[in-house]
Image 1 (cartoon, rainbow, N blue to C red):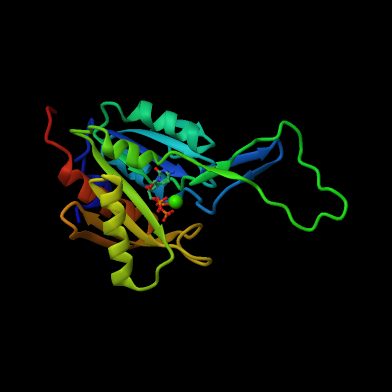
Image 2 (cartoon, rainbow, N blue to C red):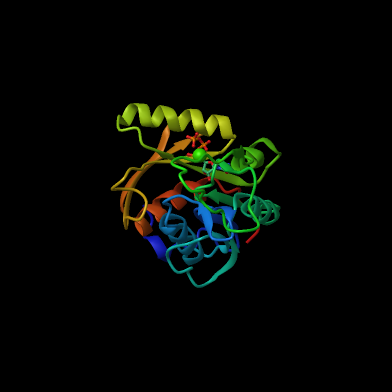
Length: 232
Ligand code: CTP
Ligand code: CA
């Protein structure tokens, strides 16, 4: 592992990172969300900037401060994130999809606060699929862009966890897929993380655990090796 922030192996590279979790509105006061804090994505953005990259951070409802030295594009919903990342990805050297994107959104958004009815003990909400943003980027031509996905899985068996990651990388057309285990007590708001980075040949290109900043540098080591050499 290179000595983290002392290497400028991403100098002048355009790196786009999505971080946080989307929120899908139900009415003016409610949303469907998820438990992603944005810490790991923000650490990747900060680490990439420290290695010399020109970083665009697409920030979905972060629970942590955005790092300095990055262009920050705030978004909230999956559709907003899609628009922002699609625009930023054109000509980017690296796109890292660390954000937790809602798979579904409420089919209808009420203009006014939804009221309960007397005696009502249950209610259901109809949801519609959101676009798969990573798969959209992965299936479109993206020569010269290293596309990195994340997989949040609750699988506890390490071998099965890697298999899920391999299948997900293939399905999305990503160049790399970072697998981490999430659950009620670890993964999301924690300051530490444990990940495996799966490459296009299905091998594990890196394993890293510890503070999210050191995990970020380990992920960027794998990415930097795959960024096409360019004019300095
Ligand atoms: N992702 C995306 N658009 C979506 C859902 C997910 O771009 N609508 C991206 C995430 O940012 C992440 C990767 O796809 O990089 C994997 O997300 P994950 O939720 O683990 O995978 P899914 O394909 O949604 O599968 P699952 O049914 O396991 O949630
Ligand atoms: Ca999902």
